[in-house]
Amino acid sequence: MPKGPFLPDEFTPTKFSTAADKAEFGNHFQRFIESEWAQAHFTKDFYHRLSMCFGHIAHMDRPTFYETWFTCDHDRLRFLEKTLKWPCWGDPEYTFSDVERAIQQEVRKRNYLARYQLRVAESERASEMETLRHLEPKYCAPANRTDDDGTMSADLAASAPTPPVIERTPVQASLF
Image (cartoon, rainbow, N blue to C red; front, side, top):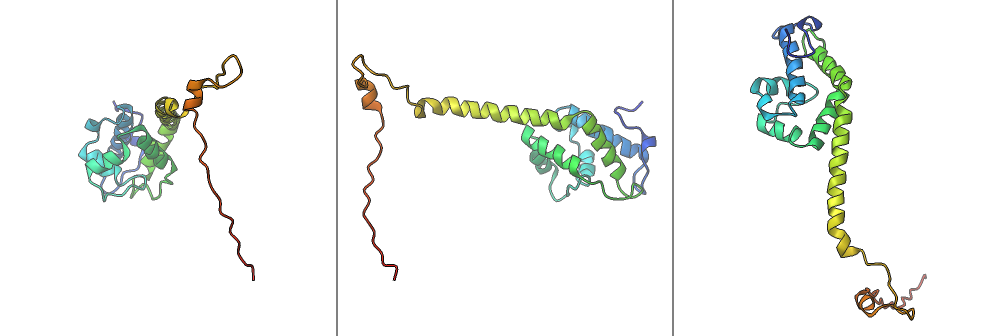
């Protein structure tokens, strides 16, 4: 029984990989996402195959590849976007293009992109709200309060910023 949505009979074997190898890669890909991108699931064999799919290049080592794509939701979103945009070039007899297409369909079906877009948006909002809470006391002046006689209270008047005086010297130039 397969451990995922992909079965070997869905894929074309290559000279160096069986249809079962292709199905296992697709199923491992799904388990990796479902594990919340757990580093324990980012094995050497999985990295080796993934670095040759979806337009990735193998010039990075495994830890750098992991750090680039899987350590925060923003990077994971970028990874999913790249995965879904890849045109899956090649003949399935020579490449993993059939698995790439099947993975793309499964990623769309499980709505991973929208999930991570929402996570990133929520994270950015929380970060911005924290910045706002930090800066609000510094930059937001209290509403103008006046005394009974209509003048500004002394404590508010003392704290009210005064605009800087800019002296301008006229400049005269000849057009001819």
